[in-house]
Structure formats: structure tokens, C-alpha cells
Length: 429
Image (cartoon, rainbow, N blue to C red):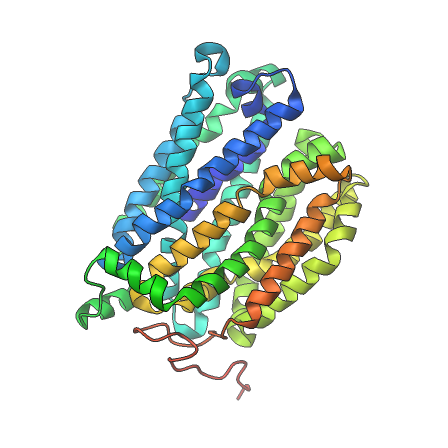
């Protein structure tokens, strides 16, 4: 629920970007207004590393659940308040300033939310089924994006264009408040993870948040950089396919807003259905084979898939679906692969800091960078080139990642290296 709330906000912002541009950046130049809106989207990512630096070590010192209860309140409140900010016509320059402030709050909270949620799920899951159970975190990611697209589409069908531009776009943001309250209630019913409680009982928790951060950077810098390489591949693909795609389909391909939303709803629903199966496969055959298949596959199909998307709705759906299915192999294994790259006492901080630093640099900026690349190169398939470069970076990083499927993630040793790992794909009796 927390992850769905987080990505519901990002989805609503992406799918309502043209309305937000009109409300907060009415310059008369549609391209400039869209670029400004995408830059504000990227602004929220600047505070994600700060959120990771602050909240990650706190989660390793005091537990995962406390941080997660805090982040969901901040996320839901900032999402809700975006729907209340008056337009530029009403309060002038203060309107975009308030929008930026709320996106910054959202970014800070997300810095602790995602790493904490993935760590929480990985530490609760049995070693043999960590891929399957962890995949439901990303089911929540796609559920948030899909729910956002569905709600925006419903209001576009029900309301007139003028009503949608005037006030209708605000309602999806207001719905983020109740979603956050439900998530907060559910999180408050849970105990902290068994893995963290074991660490507490054995008196192996870091003495304070500062020492946890120092230990992480000095001892586990290789894991931080390796994770960063995977995150570059993951998030350039993610924000191109899920956040930038509505703008791309409407402004570069010529689909209507309704057509682009229908395409995304269909494509993302298929991806949601495949995620648990992909997670289960990674338990059986390993995380690295799933990542190799995804990275190599996306590198090969990126250009032809984007070329297909320029040939009408039906072929655009095919192109998006092909890339989406390949991307699921990465997406479904995040909470099984990334937390397992660090030992328990620095796991929350290691994941949160590395993930959010590289997401801020290469993820949140992807929509604006893609927009600029198209303008510079004059070709609508420029985002495919960006995805291909990101996949190459991911391949280099993947070489240095140990296989952690079925390996224990308890204790202060490195999973897959210092901990026991049972055989993959055992023979059936």
C-alpha cells in the first residue's frame, strides 16, 4: 500500500502533466510549459538522496517499521496538498513555488520509503521465496501507476476538457490522502522484521545512525557503486516507460490523451500479472539470469520498439508491451536483489542511499532528458538510445554482483558470499 501510494503520486503527476503545465506554467509556449513541468517532476528527486542519508541510518538503528510509518504520512500529505495549491492565475509565482516545495517533501520521504519497504519485505520473506514475495512490492509500483492512469482517464471521460483543465486534474491528487491513511493503519499493525529483531537480540545494531553511515561508506563502497550501476539501468528504463511515456505518446507520436492512457493501462496491467511469476522464476533460476535477459533484451529491442510506437495505437501497444515484459524481469526482483547486496546492520542505509543518489541523477531526470534529446537530435526514437546506454551500464555492474537467490540475508555477513546459499533449480523428486 505504501509503495502504491508513492507511485500513485508519480503516476498522477505524469499523466496529468499537460494540465499541471497549464495551471502552473501558463507561458503560451506549450513545449516550454511541458519542459518546466517535467523539470519540477525531476526536482523531487533531488531530495531523495537526502531522505536516504537521513532516514536510512535511522532505520538501521531503530528499526524499519518506524521509518516506514513516517514516510507514508509525509508522502500522502504532500500528494494531497498538490491538489489544493491555487493556480498561477490565482496567486502568481507563488503557485509553482508551492508545487516545488511539495515535490521536495515528497522526494525526501520517498528517500526512506522505497529502500525501507524493499528491505522490510526481503527480511520477512523466506530465503527460498524471497523473489516471489518481494515481487509484490513492485506489483504495488505498477498498481499505483495503473490506478493513477485509470482515475485520470475516468475523469477525462466524465468531465469536459475545460472542467478537467480547471479543477478535475486535482481530484486524483486529493485521493492520495485516504490511500496514505490506509497504508499507515496497515503498517502500524506489523512488528519489525525477524531479521532486524535478531540483530537487536544479539546486540549487533549500530550504536548510532552516524556510525552506521560511516561503516557503510568505508566498508561497503563497492556494493554502493555496483548497486548504483544497476539502478541507472533500472530507472532510465522505468521512468522512460512509465513516467515519460504519456508525454511521448501524445506530443511526439500524436496519440490522443485517452489513447495513451488506455495503452498504458493495458500494458501495465499485463506487467502486473507477470510480476509474481517473474519473481518466482528468479527464486528457481537466480536473480542474475533474470537481469541478463532483461538488459540484453531491452538493448536489442529498444530501437525497433520505439519505431513501432510511431506507427499508430495498435503497434504502439505492441512496442510498449515488448519492452514492458522484458523490463518486468528487472522490476520483479528489486526487493530480492538490492537489499541482499548488504549485511543487515547497514542494509536499510546502503539500499536507500545508493538507490536514491543514482535515481536522482539518472531516474527522475529521464523524462526531461528524453525531451531534450528529441529536440537536439530531431528524432523521436532518441529515448531508445538513452535506454540502450543505461542497459550497457547495468551489464557492467551485473558482472560484479554475487548471486543471492536462496542465500540467507541474516547477520552481518555479505549475502551470497559469507552466508549459506542453497542450490538453485533443484531436481524434482
